[in-house]
Length: 122
Ligand SMILES: [Zn+2]
Image (cartoon, rainbow, N blue to C red; front, side, top):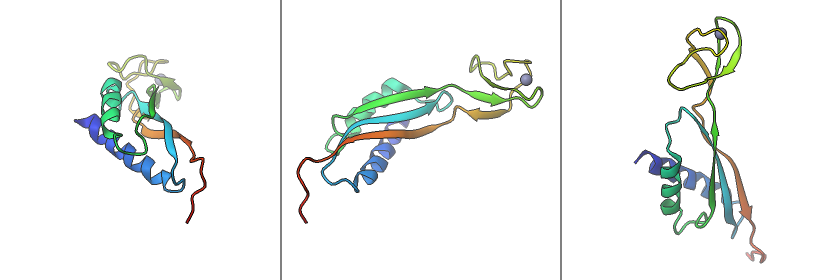
């Protein structure tokens, strides 16, 4: 499953960032997902629940922020948001849009953690 491998790499990179905060627990993971990333949020949420079991991310929330597709039109020079994924055309002049500026993202935007209350002794 596509989403499962995505989630697995998220868990991996969050766990790596946590190395600097021993004992910390992850509360929330925010993702930026472009509309062209072909990711189904429901599957992502489902896989997140499975993949985080037994990791410092267990029980944390996954927040998916969907980014619209934006293009730069070479014909009229405008930047715009695609009205529909079915028509890759400039919303201003209708020319075919070839220069996609946003929409393929699949990245961690932010991680919220709760640091351990007790001091970590060496
Ligand atoms: Zn245009």
